[in-house]
Image (cartoon, rainbow, N blue to C red; front, side):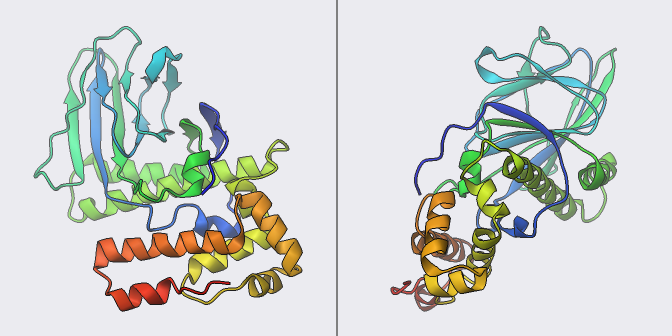
Length: 299
């Protein structure tokens, strides 16, 4: 895949309703194990988060805090319902104030394999409750959208996302049967809402002539992406994809290449290899099934 232009460092936006192409936002092959911790702290407090290979996120459920980004960037004040997503999993900190001493973020878990932990810091000041965690994403074949995201995204929860945050708060309030399965699913849904809001904003921006967000909003290219992602094993051709999109073969191929950055069949090959790699890793798919998913003739 060709390199994407450098994204802005930080963006804040509100979530809205999604286009039909939202199922291509983050394919299932990209989502990996989610680990998080209910973080209940009282001022003064400061938590240091080391750099990780995945991506980090924080959800403020009650109270407020300050995100201290890496590199001496200005602190970001967060309030109830705010969600932040650090694309590169870079080192950062959360605190009640910028000058509060920091301690390492070290969740306690009922057992090492549990996806949910707890952090508690006592103190005389105001209480803040958060969900802090990380998505362990597959970096071997990263989704194009992840390369276009800003390094730090902030989303104010309302509507659908607000209800997700409320559900997270209720599940984390006290341990209950099934929580280890429910909370990671809610966190996955939260990630998709965040990505969807960013795609909608970028697609509506006048300064976005190409890229994944514009491609998803385009009727012809968005339809083709949906088809490829839904049925990677189908023997797609440029002619068939163009006909389903209502365009001539040449016009469709040019538009797809302009928006995505590579021709339709090159992208299809990448997606087939990504899907096959997931099946091989996670399910031990036999070689025959692998070959059926990635046929040698794709044109």
